[in-house]
Amino acid sequence: MTRFLLTLEYEGTAYSGWQRQLNGPSVQEEVERALRKVLGAHTGVTGASRTDAGVHALGQRAHFDAVTSIPAAKWPFVLNTLLPPDIRAVACHQVDPRLHARFDATEKTYEYRIFNRRQPSATRRHFTAFVPLPLDINAMRRALPPLLGRHDFRAFQAAGGSAKTTVRELRAARLCQQGAELVLTLSGTAFLYNMVRIIAGSLIAVGQGKLDSQVFARAIASGDRLDLGITAPACGLTLLQVRYEGLP
Image (cartoon, rainbow, N blue to C red; front, side):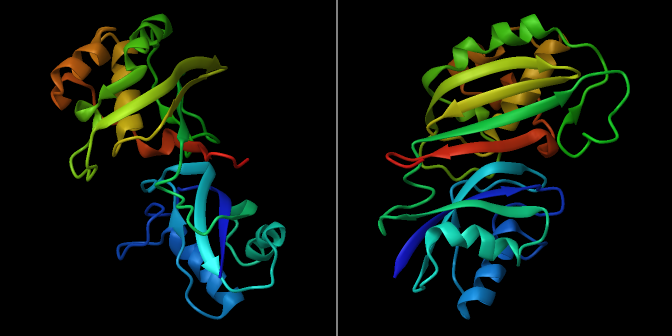
């Protein structure tokens, strides 16, 4: 039995999220269906991040076990002949059989994109959150530094989160402008349920003048979800990268 670690890219628009579920198609289900066609039996796939409905990925990671003669480097070619066009395997590595895609990840990076102009985009609507009114980018940037470091982020978790602890370490938080798009990039050891979207929604409120630049510092101190803004739409969120010790 060999353990393989896939790197997956997908557009999440048509899916109910990564995780297999009863109420709609999932990315996990599609990958497992492709593996079944190759291996002739059900093969479970464990993802590093349980991305929600409509969330995208450029660097989702997932492990699976198989008795097979197919080498790791060939798996992307094999799977991509069977996967739908909005899901692609982009890399695969043979790893230690003890490695767990979710629990052994050392850092995750997410990107949230805001489309900020008067009129919406025809081509970017599935990948950005549309905000038609001008945003104060400087105020938004001033709000970010208190997020950095190790904190109890319990105020940044949506209802339904199941994390045993709400302490997380955020290592990078930056906001840049690319034409009509504002790009928020966050890197950390792990993230709570809807944490990135809550940060993005609060940051938009700062840019609109509805919240001040001390919003994150205040929420960390209080632990109160009501100190933050709304949860931003899922379509603007992309999982960029999941890192592991000793792996590319």
